[in-house]
Image 1 (cartoon, rainbow, N blue to C red):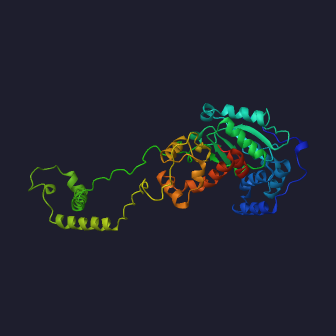
Image 2: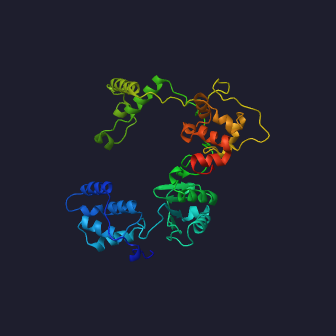
Image 3: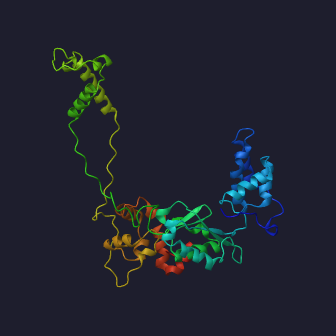
Amino acid sequence: MSVRRLAEDQFQPAAFAFNDENALRAEKTIKKYPAGRQQSAVIPLLMRAQEQDGWVTRPAIEKIADMLDMAYIRVLEVATFYTQFQLNPVGTRAHVQVCGTTPCMLRGSESLMAVCKSKIHHHPFERNADGTLSWEEVECLGACVNAPMVMIGKDTYEDLTPERLEEIIDTFEAGNGASITPGPQIDRHFSSPEGGPTTLTEDEPKAKKAPAKKAVAEAATAKVDAAPVPPSEAARPKSTDAETNAALKTPATAPKAAARNVKAVEEQAAAAPAAAPVATAKPSLTDKNRPAGIEKPAAPDDLKLISGVGPKIEGTLHELGIFTFAQVASWKRAEREWVDGYLNFKGRIERDDWVKQAKALAKGGEAEYIKVFGKKPR
């Protein structure tokens, strides 16, 4: 493990105090633990201090130690052991943590680190000239299927290219980091395949159902056959003579037992919940709410500039006769719902606000998009 020390005295503030909100939260956190066990709150309080100031200072360590009746060295041991705690000042607007573990490395994390070196500082943990940005390499961030990725604050930004990371860093440096949607930065929903699902996209064939009476009878017979053999019977030698081997006789109570079992199974079947409804099929291409299509123009718009549209979705839109931003910008609710259902997006068009994006792009291209959303269209 690398040596971790507190920042030099020249960077340390004179004192530390939780603000009103965090002081109240710290008090509630301490009360979660039994009397005499308050020291268990040391990690949550250190994290609260780091979220307030951006890093863990010496005065913060001493203040938390006093609150929990701990020796300073004990809190210092915790702060220096866990790499989640920043012991030096970090960027005031963004501290970029680049995952360098094998999956991300194989997918280009070294190129992301090169971007951080050129955009922020050549060395990790060093801030840029304005003190607004810093970066470091970290171990696995837990979304390997979406490699490569970075974490800024509590949010992860995945499926990155060097160009996309440059845009993200520039946006944070401008103070507009909140405008960037965390998660995958390509046409992917969480960890689903790029462009949408590739399997199980249609209703599975319905399994043939056995006649209800036959199924009930088989279940009842199985219960009778599964009745345990008394130990005294199991210990005796088995006879093949029905007169001497009781197991080969039909017990007088068997019909009654079978009838009871049949009734029980029928009751269970009646009480069972109804089968889940079959997924709704795609809307018809002849539906009145289908957006009007046009002939393919000589220079169609790049619909992939709309967040949520990848190459596959753009191809589907072209098949529907959708080639321009103006068409998307003109969609009414019914038309949006039709396209959403046809693409099986489950509300994604509304969440990503395709219409607003398309209006900006139709009005003034990328310049208007940046003006409206504070970032470049991807």
